Length: 81
Image (cartoon, rainbow, N blue to C red; front, side, top):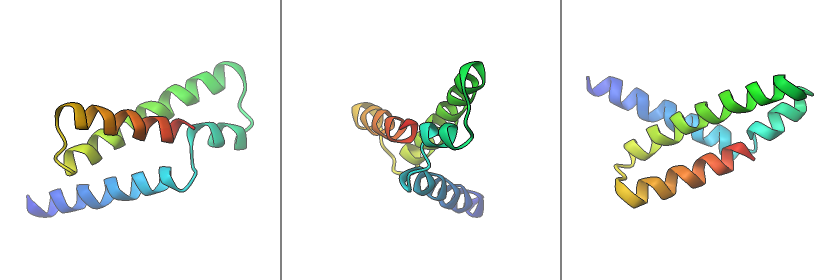
């Protein structure tokens, strides 16, 4: 069980690092040259994935309440671009 927790922590760290390196949802959609409904669908999924990754990171950091809300809000905003 401990190994699973460590693996989850490492994976969530890697995901957040990927977001921090500029791989924002907006940049990815521009690289893929998405427009219209395809872009809307991609952005929704990308933001949902970012929210999940940010929530996981907040849990790893043992954030609760307002600290968690603030962290997740900023993390998702940074990921969305």
